[in-house]
Length: 88
Image (cartoon, rainbow, N blue to C red; front, side):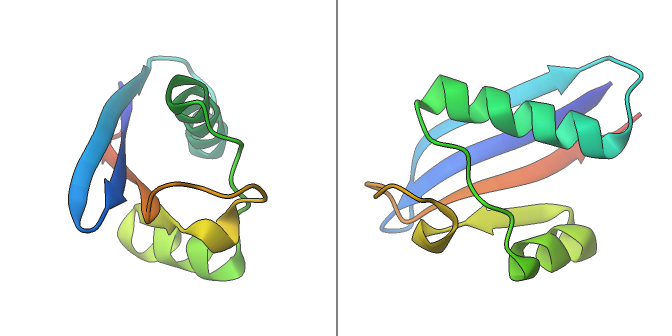
């Protein structure tokens, strides 16, 4: 089972969170992208852009923060953080 935890923060306070589960047999990358799409759908957000810094943080820590630089439209929070909490 693959699980990804997504959280929205503003002023160092947790506003929303969700856990996305995926029991499919796709690659880790596909599962991450699908989970991020589901997070954006649940939180009613546009899909963020993966900047080089975001990718390198995710590779290093299994966690990534999407700030206003990652979104095309304005956001009313400080950042969206995703973290892989369980992998197959």
